[in-house]
Image 1 (tube, rainbow, N blue to C red):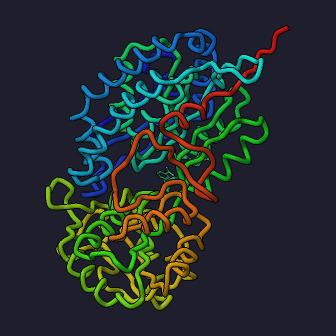
Image 2: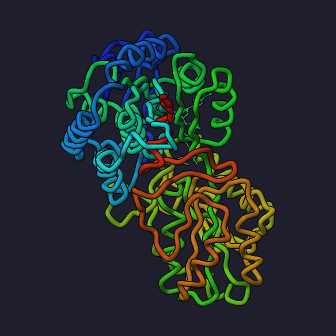
Image 3: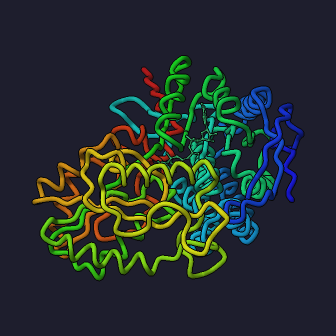
Length: 472
Ligand code: NAD
């Protein structure tokens, strides 16, 4: 049993003013594994005040000083990789292959940010004016539970690279992972108040950060509904806002595709992070005349997909993060059945032989039309929809007929043709015949998948504002 009764403000672990107790539950076993004392709005205000005090000195640190800090942070988080790995499996339920990637990603993003900073110039010329890119001020960083350490480290790295100080509000469901990251970052010996971590509820701590006049910037990753609330709250003080929100990504299978290669990739993209991924390829678009062949390969492949104990190396789909998410996903499977979609794999309930934990059967519907709720709404679980198309124009129209635009996938044998199709998709990132991440590439959504970009130079500039100097 882990007791987490401290938050991190002004370079120290302190007891929060808030005293709401919150239980942490292992999603694979439903056992209580920890108790958290949640922070409240007063704690958020204390953290913002600390970040505000730290800003004048930190914003004047040199680029080299900040690169050195990022490298120390990288080494410190790397040193805790195995603790982080254990916490990701226990608290979040990620299968070990995924948890290994997630634990490593948390330190990787710090080093990647250091590289971006090395190559970035804060000054430039515009006509006769000198332009200096200035840090925005105190940044509020609000993160979800589906990749806790990666989001904390990634957002903090970009904010600090720019010279901003930060108040971080992670998900209350990830308190054990957050504690490990906080301890690691504390060990990196940064100036007091540069980063503060306040675990509490969104409606209290998150809302306070979104509205506080001393916060200049919000970087939020989470649901589209909460993103809209944050944008409205932040408007009052005209904060700069980056929103990384939901998705309903199309995975376009072109008619020349080799299904033996592509079906495992399609399911990999769909069941990624146990389906709890904003970028999951959840709408699989298949040429009508090859549907039967595609379905047959999907059925074979799903039969080989193991949803269960995350400690088992053969498991690739772990549990949903909690009961609420499990019920939500079950609800959508029912909706799909009621809407007349045809189940070709999975269905309601837990996988066979599992009677505890928030496990879902990896599920694929066929005969889905793009107007069904299962094709329009983000499910955030391992539930995929196969939708047929007549020709390329039809495929593109279906792919783009969504309020979202975070990521898309185009797979086909003719690379040039696949790239042409990709150019017609409305999404911030289009993956052509690959599932590999590129850390230097901008990441973010078109349409209601968000505002702004993260990663690389684009992510750094989200925490900067140009200031022009004109002299006689
Ligand atoms: P969520 O929106 O419920 O919560 C995200 C964070 O916001 C949490 O820390 C939460 O406590 C906080 N929050 C909640 N209400 C708030 C409020 N009123 N004011 C300020 N903060 C508030 O999302 P979640 O359930 O934690 O995560 C799942 C969602 O995140 C999915 O919709 C998914 O698509 C999205 N997501 C997006 C990306 C991306 O990069 N685009 C990545 C991962 C997850």
